[in-house]
Amino acid sequence: MTFFSTLKKTGPAALAGALALGLPGTTAALAQDAAPALDTGNTAWMLVSTALVLMMTIPGLALFYAGMVRKKNVLATVMQSFAVCCLATVLWFVVGYSLAFSDGGGANAYVGGLSKAFFAGITVNTLWAPGVANIPEYLFAVFQMTFAIITPALIAGAFAERMKFSALLLFTGLWLLVVYAPIAHWVWGGGFLGSAGVLDFAGGTVVHINAGVAGLVCALVLGKRQGYGSVNMAPYNLVYAVIGAALLWVGWFGFNAGSELAADGLAAAAMVNTQVAAATAGLAWMFTEWLVAKKPSVLGIISGAVAGLVAITPAAGFVNPTGAFVIGIVAGIVCYFAAVKLKHALGYDDSLDAFGVHGVGGIVGAILTGVFADKAINSLGENASVVTQLYGIVFTIVWTALATAAILYAVKALVGLRPSGQQEIEGLDVSQHGEVVQ
Image (cartoon, rainbow, N blue to C red; front, top):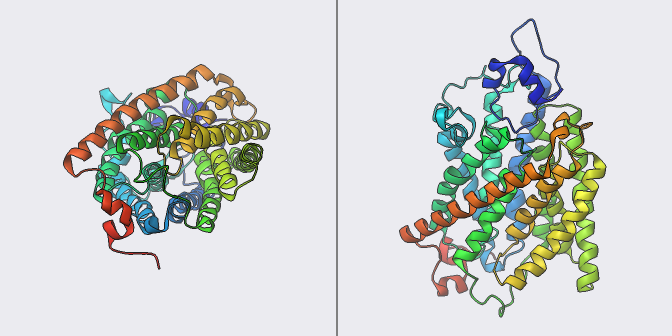
């Protein structure tokens, strides 16, 4: 039994407690003759999953990105991930969670309301999806908070080494509320994409396409880094990047398997699929680079693994391991050409390949979810459709691109987007934070 079929059986009471229509649910048995009780097994797994997803941003993404910039921008890059974590946490508590996961009334197809601002109405006894997942709503809210944290943090990879810190904070705050929260609602909170049947198990659309497209818009609006194409911009410390990628990989089990909201067989399938896709994509990128560039690079294999993790995210709870294997191969090859060849052919400066890996990888995964969804893994796979998946992709791309551009120009008018040319050459560590790596 899936989350959706369970809701149909349990009626409005369960539906009111489980607005995330796009999230797959549990196969836990329903108590027919008693009020739902807290499921301690599901709760324990979700506590662990939440910690794993937070680890993806701090320290995972922070180290992954910091290892790929130049020495003069290492601290500024780590600071971006850490500050975004703090800011997104507060905004999610104040209003973001409510906009994503409460009833928006007449506007519910597009955005939630304000009834859960400041986590209003949630107590230690409030269950999320009563009769289905039976986990504390506080736990569901903070699990979703970790997704809201990492998504804008991913965008920073596209404009690394060239955005003012004040602009970063203002952009992140506006983007989280105007772009992320509504799209999360569209897919997972009862909005029109989830209702249309768009499948996104753990964030291929909500997180990765969203962040990747926003990153591309940022790269285009901000322009290239000083000296791009003529100055050596080799990574400062690839060991940092490998450690960061490894932390992302481990944390991704919470990201994908945790999105089942239960400790059950489907969570285990999502975990297997995550591992298979990441490893396969790492090898696919590595061998492709070996053939094209004549040497397999460390940066290449870790980028490939992350591309595989991205691509399997929407599909993790819908496909079987063979599907995950194929998704990994396609993601590794396609993302290599997007990040290495397409970027240079079109001439944009996506510093750390936020679009090439997350945007393109998310699109690949979302489309292939429609191809490889297996009803034997998840009954929702029976209605999977590439056309429906494309519908979700197109709406996400259009809204993200337009809203991100509008926010950037507003921030530019208010505080400016870039430091001066001299400050950028000097490095953001000194110019923005007054600190240096020794």
